[in-house]
Image (cartoon, rainbow, N blue to C red; front, side):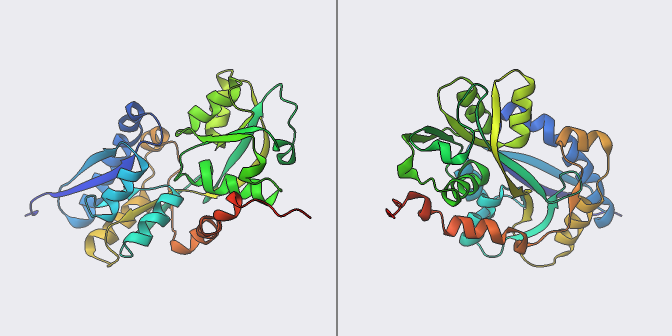
Amino acid sequence: MPESSVELVFGIYTADKPSAVVAQFRPLLNQLELAIGQQLNQPVHIKLDIAATYEKGIENVVAGKVDLARLGPASYILAKQQNDDLSIVALESSKGKKIFYGVIAVHQQSDIHSIEDLKGKTFAFGNEKSTIGRFLSQQQLHENGISASDLKSYKYLGRHDAVGAAVGGGFYDAGALKESTFKKQLNKGIPMRAIAKFPNVTKPWIVSTREDSQLNIAIKKALLSIDDPAALRAFGKQGFLEGSDADYARIRQSMANNDDFFERQREP
């Protein structure tokens, strides 16, 4: 006879509008419940826990309040620094790859055509703990000769769509956001164009313990096996891939070097 049901909590923070999160993830979690349950020979129920902020999402993972979580790369690195027992079970697949892109965008009619043109301009970043919205975009600016002191002003606006709306609305000269959000907003008529594009690693799904327990093994196998078209279509990805902490070495380095962006560049 099957044992009593396994109750799991899946944690996510609202990088996008909260109203869309349930519609995006519930079909996938339903498939995950079935796949894990088949391996454990037990019914499985996964509760969706939506944190209101990046900070709360990280806190819930570090404290073990969730069993499984989806974090952005930078949030994962910050959480791992606080709890080394966290372990990656899979990475999201973006068209069969672990890589997707961020862009630096300007208004369609802007006279800005390169990062070097941003000197003396205003810039919209995303969340202060965002991989694309902060760390990788600031690295991109710094590597092309623009530091914080070169900008007229800058501000962290939070969500990617807020950055796009601010740039398209002419409130900021430029901004950093996910390429997928950028394309969606272009299709909605927001007048933007990209002046730079840079790679990021897809989001990791992590468990709260490092040990290869029967449950963690079942979660990993279940994620890697999910191929339900409707669930994946709602989720917006093509499935999951094998992954490890080593996939995030470049992002970890960009975070470690982030202070470089804020240091005034030396005069030649």
